[in-house]
Length: 166
Image (cartoon, rainbow, N blue to C red; front, side, top):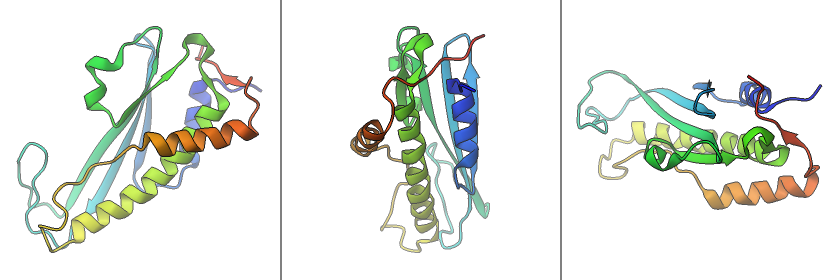
């Protein structure tokens, strides 16, 4: 059975080891997929926490959300929304994505989740408010490219994960 891009993403995301939530949505009209990443963590040491809007929260837990956008490079222009996402990654219309790129995304996403979860724990548990002043996820294009190159060396370059049929 051949997987399309949607099937591949659903299965791959379900296999990632992550204590938070990963939610996949498909916008058929815009030809995009969004992978929403949600961390929910208890804060211990910081008595005062400011969010990006400058609001404070006395709650013992915080929710941190970011997202990855996959878009059809022919149909969608990400420039107007790219600041709203951790990264915007293109696919090739109905042809979709090469398998190596999909596998590189899942491999790098697992690394990103692991590193970000430990960074967020450190951020929330730090009693030295001057040590870490901002938490945000950071996408490394270089690391993703390195992983993609490794996957391409061992994958069939002609295998593509097609865009789902409507």
